[in-house]
Image 1 (cartoon, rainbow, N blue to C red):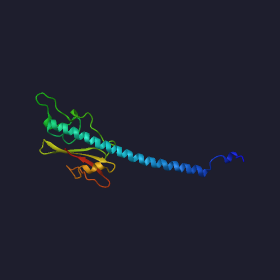
Image 2: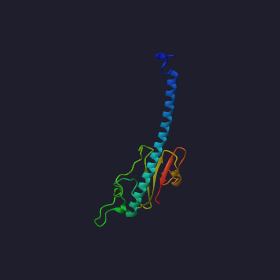
Image 3: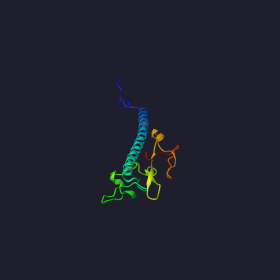
Image 4: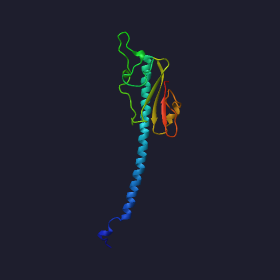
Length: 165
């Protein structure tokens, strides 16, 4: 028995079922991809904080002091002014570019605060990054308010905070 031209195609119901299956698969893949991107940005944040922590350690080793209230390439301590004709040491002497958060919009920015023990000498600091997802790295960080920076984790805020080793 030979089919006519109208009997050879797909029915409207078959086409709708295929379109629905494709839409469902697309939604599943897209949601998994978004979660992966958030975890990737969090890994970058943790890496950036470790890089800044190393840079601060190198700076402190030379200057015996941490930079003031903000991290910038030109930041310098009062103890690291040029002596005996030597050039001033700046934070940029140890890092060429200050890392920024992958999103770089509030509240996703890096926060730094030094705690001076006397008016001129900062001997401690805290660095904070806000993570997008709950991570195992949060079990090893600071979880108290330090130098007026909140580092406490709750159901809506995952703060990764570190201080000098």
